[in-house]
Length: 102
Length: 478
Image 1 (cartoon, chains in turn red, yellow):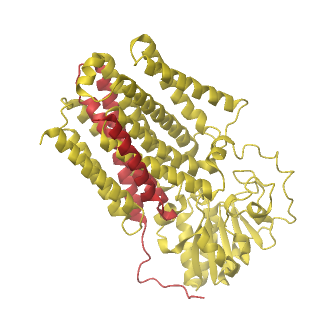
Image 2: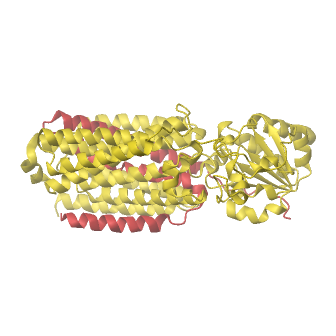
Image 3: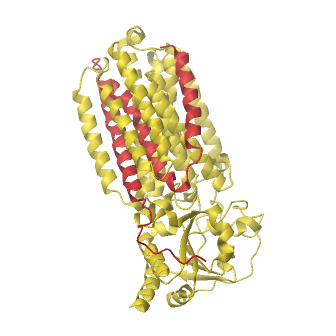
């Protein structure tokens, strides 16, 4: 793959990121942060390739395995904790009494 | 179509799932599904990677996956909501370190087999690959130790106060120079020989040190900025790792996280009316006392109020606004706050919560705690929505918030927080401030609100004080 294409993808993804997140209500800031944090665990793909390479170098295997474990913590912990938080955000139950409008 | 193309197609699908997931995370009604979608994207990316031709041995992958999943699962289930800021910092640190290790492992492959063998399988040139390895290690290392230090501050294991020492900027400047010098040497040597290897270890160590010295001078109240900045860096580290292994999905996903983190960082800085440079380098709040003489002096005294009298004031109120701050998180008072809001509503008052964007220790901290306590999110209002209504409020209850309600930010040009947008609690008819003791807030700035003629101070632990008020309400209802 031409290396230039990688930069091309990088720049477009940066603009896309800015467009996606531009207007998010402040109450979603924490879930957005931990949710995107989980996505940064995508480095797990690189970790898997390193850990599974089996090129006869113990160093690569050790580093790769540690990377897999750490990235998995990031991914699993990040998504679950985000889901737990979002599960708590509830609408007002319908039977509740609205305060007298003044 | 060969396997490599199929894998790349799957990566495109994963990227689309991440993009939709992030978009849906930005709206309350779709947020949970968005998170699910993005996790499916991750699952897809992981599964197809296992079919990559470079992946031949699965035993260590299994070890890593099982161990990581067990730890991640346990952390996510056991963590208390009040500890969420440090949890996010810790997860961030894991991601950063993983990206660092991916860069290191690639370098290990290069040294083990030599460039000729390496470039048979991988795309790149010696200069390009070493440059991006340098970036992955640099950003990953910064993220790792920076997040760990932030974790220490947030969990109270390290002092939340900014740590400053003479010549700090010079030390940091020297670290950065050393980093780039080592990086340049590494790239020139193509990472070969003893010089290349030593240069690698040098910038690895310097990046880890710089992560600590970068976060050290930043005070507890500026943590929302630090956390979102570290989040952004962890994305960029993954992105750099993506350049190392020339993998599109890493570049796209890492870049999305990086930019969304930048936006959050900017929002947090704006909410404090300060530049990122000011947050990072000023050691804000460390020089307490030095400035106290220069500032505008405010006439007035602290007027304490008892829980019984607070109840009397609140019982007569029709419009009440509750302004939570970090103090609510510290005393874990969110549940009793909700009880108070319910008691007030039962009494016929209209209650809303006013949330300052930087209240607490991470973006949206207060919203998460109140959600945990089952406060419906419609009741939470942002600063700009609440301020115009403030003069109509009978009572404003300030729970462990300080700088975000300090009118000095609007009036006193000598104040360090001058220009920061605040919630205008002082415009309410009566203000009840819950505070543990008589000291100044984290920034050490005298709060003009506490001295205002319409302010009453309810001293003591927020949870205990509020429980006392709630029990008064219950006694009347019974």
